[in-house]
Image (cartoon, rainbow, N blue to C red):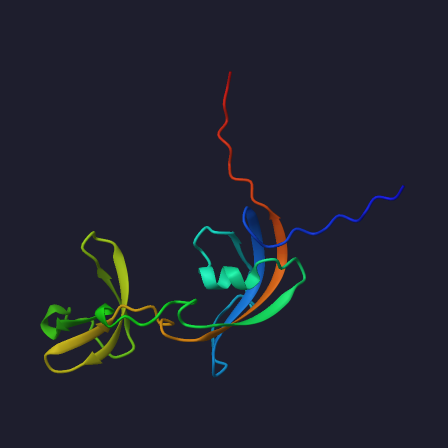
Length: 160
């Protein structure tokens, strides 16, 4: 009697996934990639990968590659005009004059750090966009699955 070959684990719940990825805009511009650095590793459902990206790789196994179109809604969501705020220019430190394209850190009401992109500067006002830079953008997600393993959360040690 011969043993059947063991089936490789597939991407899904209760799995740790290690992968290489590239995120591209629809014009081909690379926005993020792990190809020239260490691969990414995450636990399915831990919030490190957007739900649209997780759905795109469900069922893949080590060695599989896929290129998937992700619309804005399933990626970083639509742009929210309420996330664009206006500040008096006088509120900015004169040592760090804001310029369009500059990313600055702000504090929200709870004191948490929040990055914003300066989108416009005029004599009196500075416009800051707090939307994710990829919000409202359709994307191509290219992925290569390197490893899939059973996620084993740390178990508390009990002594008797």
